[in-house]
Image (cartoon, rainbow, N blue to C red):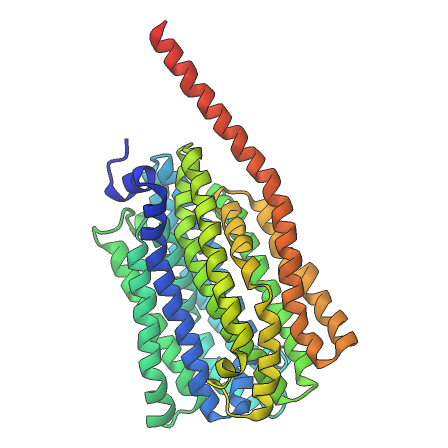
Length: 463
């Protein structure tokens, strides 16, 4: 039925082996990205506490830029994997081309608007007078690179959707490694300071973008990127947005939550702002690796759902939850018991080390639950279930996190700032479990229907 080797693999390869083959490249790519984030913060930390504060302030804006790329990337990836499962390659080509070109246009608009409103945005995100000069130097260059950041977020997800996880890994890893190499050269050797860090990021993103476009123009891709396939339609955008909007909401709420957190942290001084930034970078290590597991899981789930292979879908869910939970427990032990050693890599400031180490210990508490929550949210996206995905997106960084910041900081002071995220993640895990019960019932019903169909076909053959 499936002529292409990649789509046949999604349909027939044993699920444990398939998930491993799909997840390992994604994990490596995300791991390299996480290591880059950590190394980047280490280099910036050598400039000073104010420089770390500037990167922390710029992070919500970077999340907004990423959100647009992820909206199209995750929405398109879900749609494409289901279309390939249905053997509808022609429509998958149209979706991928439309998504790539639309994202590129939006990147140009974002770059122009971001530069025009740069200082008001940074002030909104919590930049103090001390941090502002560093924030302007760093963020202006990041905004110029919006086109590449958004395109990477988009194309990496679509590449994985067609089963080319290794190409996604190569593009991510090449960009991240180039970034790590360029950071010290531009920051210290060329004396660019914090602007060197953002310049390295943009150059690396540009290289990754070129690699991904070259892949789509080659015969290695299942899909064909051709300008004539750019035929935008309401039906394509609706299907992309159905799954992409929950991602957009989640990222935008994360940006709002980080803005609130930065502004409240600024009350306590640059050391607390820097601590918030360091913890988020360290915590992102665990988040990115778990995301690597689920990025390998997403095309497997979406394809087999589209192909009505429900047993394979159920097996992929169980195995992914098991693997991500084991990793979460291991990371919890590392961050909970060795928090000071971890933080000392990023700052030599005793005040920052003390504050951030205590905060990281609190963040670590929810890591054993994170794998389940992210896996099920990815499942909703893979199956095209926009409503539960939207509910979870609104809850984690909105309904739960933002109120928790105000509530816990008011009652526990500075320490309360670091209690908000683990509480929000714990509540989100509970809500995820409730929503999963209803979706799993639907999967069971589909399995029953598919078995009945097979039995009816067999019966007709013997009559």
